[in-house]
Image (cartoon, rainbow, N blue to C red; front, side):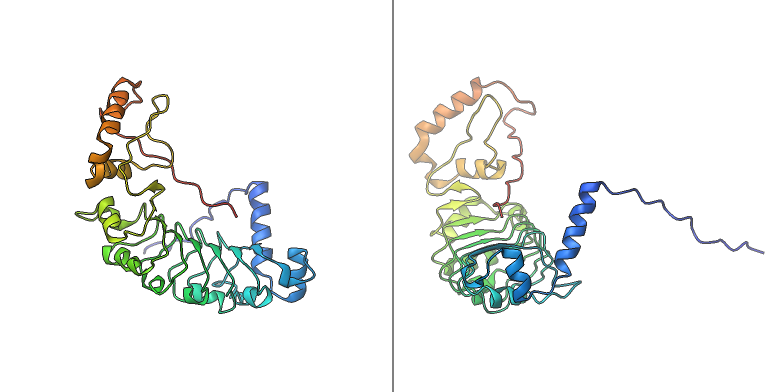
Length: 276
């Protein structure tokens, strides 16, 4: 008869580096914490929690089911909150008490839903790169938001971008590395026409053509993407900068080669996240 096969041999696990172990231990200790007045006083070093204006934490609203709404309840005057590298599916998990919050960082936090953002009525800057956001409609009633970083999310419908027309206060937007950027007919100019209130798009100024900058033959500066550079050169207002463009083209022709096919613009590195 057939021989029964035993269980597969165990795969040996490699030892973690000491620094990784330390970071994991700190995170596990942090996310296992229940937010109380006593803990928050110890963590912030402030006896009077009304004096705390900024806070950096890692939270887990999924596995550990932390009561993240306690942050706002314990710190009613909080203005800046960094929860990057946390686990938080929706803004609603932060509760309704962050009424004075002006800046929120939630980079790489498993975020999927912006619902609940209206509970932050004076929010001015929202940094949520590298999450899973597709729906921007919760932002359309927000009238104080000035900076929105959506780099590396899942926005795939231009109508979601058009929703931001209603956010009249919006001045800076980063939509790079979203699926919508690969859709047929999409261009930087489409975004600028849909959102005329913008002053900066994908880290580049709006309102004029922006040609690639040349620095010792290294191609565009690190804050520019190749898509943004080409879209800017093709923008309808490029005639106003025609002379500058021609001069830069001549300069590019004389610059040392940095490899690749002629006319190929190297990809810029990922933009760093705002510090927490």
